[in-house]
Image (cartoon, rainbow, N blue to C red; front, side, top):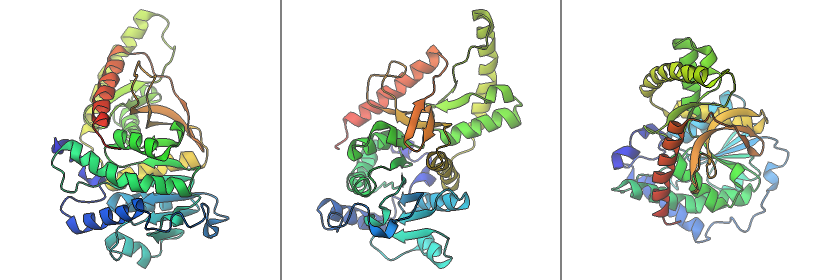
Amino acid sequence: MIAKFEEELPLYSLSSSDAARQSELLSYIAKITEGETDMKSRSKTGSRNEGCLNKITVVGAGDLGIACVLAVAAKDVADKVVLLDLSEGAAKGGTMDLEIFAVPNVEISKDFSASADSKVVVLTVNSLGNAQTYLDVIQSNVDLFRGIVPAVSHYSQNAVLLVASHPVEVMSFVSWKLSSFPKNRVIGVGANLDSERFRYILTNLLKAEVLAKDAWVIGEQGEDKVSSWTSCNAAANQAEAMAARNSREKVANRAMEVLKGKGQRSWSVGLSVADLADSILKDKRKVHSVSTLAKGCCNINSEVFLSLPCILGTTGVIEMVRLEEDPLVQERLQSSAGSINDIQQQLKL
């Protein structure tokens, strides 16, 4: 089952072969959970951050974390970006290069207090460690999050948590539980990148601009994701609606086939994170397909996160956009919810 986790390896901040750095990170997290940092002794806000309007903290200095920092800086999304490098060793690789070339408004820190008053906190840490099974891999990430999420939540109590760690659905759920934040302020990057690519393929490669307008990739990341459309009443009758759906399904299948070959690299996910952060910080009320609590949608009764089209603003998810009723789509979403919930029930939070 480990192969399932390795499908999109560039998303991970740590390699399973990087045993030394893995040990450092686990050691640091252990200190946090034992109270050996000065987290409790400092102010929850911190005077060092006063006057900073739009601040983003990126947790994790691996390839994905650095990609997020560079994308946010390039798109001028925030007034300040803090990169939390949680390894105990000296600055290496990308973090050292960020310091050398002095990217504007970017601070690199190992201290959680540097994240104080962030409006968005992006979680990118992942660890394969010595895990042998898919469940072991996820539990390893949960162990990391147990120290990280309460700490960043302590310093930025009104932040939106934006989860990019893998598997995004489960880690969004874990972040929600560990932070005690309301569900609207915990969001996974989900299928935002896939949805943007899907619409681009429909419009530019298949010349189906009308279809692309309300098209989304939703559900679970990986092979189980599914295409869908937002609800509309354009069809005059049931027969016309069925004909339109059949025609649209053929085009959507072609687009999904093209999408399969694209893969996801750290820099592309970083651009997606910057896109989401921009909508949140600037209160754009733009619709994105993001991982959100899906309980109550499509007859899902368990507490699981799935990608669904949502309107985003400064408080996170403002509203979930209604999808067109499609029994097949609902069935696939329910199947994903069931498998994700089974995994969550086996985790030690």
